[in-house]
Image 1 (cartoon, rainbow, N blue to C red):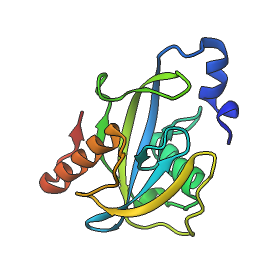
Image 2 (image 1 turned 30 degrees about the horizontal axis):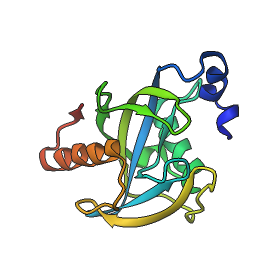
Image 3 (image 1 turned 30 degrees about the vertical axis):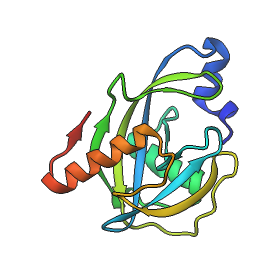
Image 4 (image 1 turned 120 degrees about the horizontal axis):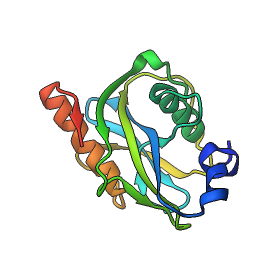
Length: 164
């Protein structure tokens, strides 16, 4: 779906670049215990994990599945997702996009180890992708993604759901 056709895109036609509170999901796709798939955003050139805003009628789980399919072309079974953190810090998860749009994102963060399909990035959203160690992600990592990785490593170490 194009941004213009999304709920957020339609809302932007009415509110311009004003800050919006936006629910969404982020998904850490593990290729093994210590490596994950990262993608470079087409708009900013920064590296991140698959993430995005919810559409009307979607749960956090639905959003996670939809964003991975939309951005990388991979098919996730919702049962394969484990929620490990929530990320909504108003300082750290206030995003300003290259076009000036501002969102304060409220994300539920998931980890997945199983999916099907081949990676086919959507060129309107993803410039390139790669597999990197969790402790040595690609240079040019989006700060919010770095914080989500830290939340995951804390979750992995403690087994406790993380909140930021």
